[in-house]
Length: 503
Image (cartoon, rainbow, N blue to C red; front, side):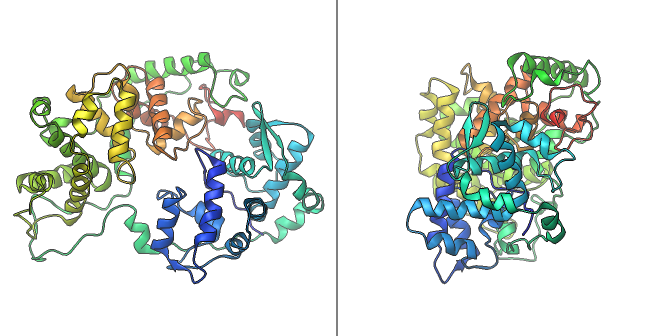
């Protein structure tokens, strides 16, 4: 048996997500299906995470160019009711890491345990197994709670109705024997064409393949998340650590979100450090894409469309700033943007066009055409929260996620959105930002399975960074400058209130 230490986060509703997993197992044809079809099935069930697909595939035991039912999926499909199906899923959770399962059972058998207490035990010398990261441990606890192996009791978790099924197994489980025979299972295979398709559309052939465009050079192969590159910048920043006395651990231990006075202290320290850095915001501005505030009064829907196309290029084109702007200029100068917006046949479909940029612009044009009065609807909203919900309802649904906050930021900088709460929806809830906010106690979870979860992260970033114009860049810059990470090497000497110091 293996020691799996990565688990799929099933937020915001773990119980519903587990049942969705059951339905995926039952819905997979006995003859199997292509990986693309299976991925679409997972996406419809809101179980597919393109940035980290392996935990879900490993849990299901599925993968390969042709996905067939794994032994686990066959056992689930053989059940008729949800109760027996959840028993099978609970057995799978045991099989993936029985040592972790037994350890949590034994701890909670005595009394309710705080999550931090459980993780502290796992990182101590008393635990002989491989230690999962804190987010993966939280994901495991959420799954166990959804399966009713555990149940929440205040801020602790304790045993629940399905736990007695594993009492005998845990009692006879030999830790040393298990560790001696422990051998990891091979990871599920993700076909190369599917893995790359998540990042960007496949380039289509052009009419004149020998022609090259000087205006739109092919994107450089990126070794780092393109958004992350302009969030953190290239220059080294001074460390924010070891400037003040350390915050005592008892002040924040055991809290899912740190107490307000602790968060105030972190905010004050971060603000003083960022003022010392004096770094100007990086990234993109409306004028980079030729978007002006005056145009909103004449043709607001076209302005919104152009900002949405810019968002698609910034986040999905996977290129450096210069290449993104070159791709935009090529689409604009050739009249392609105008033609796509008006729904007319483009007159400049030549080999000089970049196929990926054209595809992204086409997808945005199609979605915007479904909401011809979107700009007017945004103008009618009384708060940024309402405007964000309208924008997500139109341009979300599989098209945009983090891009929605960038669009909100562009509209705010144009002066189109002037609501009192608009700053709460303009910080990019990038993965690095979310995980840093979680470690600093501003979020209860680093995961964001939907727009509401991303919005919580954006608000938390603003809450931490205060009046700083680019809250996401402040948080990301802090993480890089402080060396903030899971299994942080500085946790014994860091003066900030951080979950890593609870180990």
